[in-house]
Length: 391
Image (cartoon, rainbow, N blue to C red; front, side, top):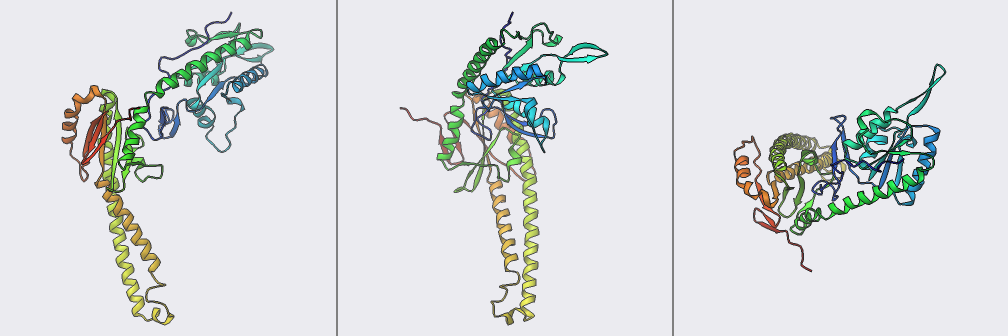
């Protein structure tokens, strides 16, 4: 007899994280939670796919074929782990973890593996499938667990609703389970889609006021990538604004810490740029002397070209461009500002946050922080109003 058709963790996978690098409502996994030194950059539920964890047996192969066919008919891409290849890539990240993170929902086929030992047939749980099932639940995925009738579940997941299938009821059970999965996960997407409209709207009004979002090639990307802030640039004002939207008190605490972290990182970046300028200036002076010595030697004058044309001009141009680029970056860093939008129930903490930030001493960089609310923000003399048209 079939049991209930799904296991849904309380922390569903779709959140409002539109403030991060991409204009998406999917939560980004920035750092690998298995290996701390590994960058992830995957988005939970961003793909309209279903990850299928299963053992590799002839019987299950037939079963995954049936599931794959049904998923394709409803417009969901089937991702069967045992069918994937990842040549030249990290197998765990590419074949397993990354696909689970991006899946809209998942299926775990918990059938035992038949084995023969000493002339005796035994059934053994598949450790890989259980491990992948653990990843799914840890990530808050919607999971459809399946197991063949007559087999036993591991003790620590017996409380989860698992479909016990037989050859007779398999097709019907899968149809019902997929119907539930797509309905619930799509409803979750739509419910949170409305929440992110204001967050995306903030970026639109920043653009109207001359601030454009910085892309992946931005030289300060690493300084902000693991924080709550996103970088914007105003070319006319020659300044950067590090922007974020804060929804709750715990997030506000993280924001204050992130401001300190970013400022310290910018101090290091500024020092590096100033050293680069100093080194470039020395190179320019040396090259000038070399050009003068070459001209005085008379060799350049006998070649029927303007003095210094062949010797040193290209190198000088390159050095001057390098110095100008470093100088522009220094100016932008010194003109940087933090812009923080507070949810209405956090506005009473604005003065405390300002006092906390004013009490911090930095070595070379002092970046002002401007607080606003969901109606707008003043960044120095720029007044940005967040007001959608009334239609």
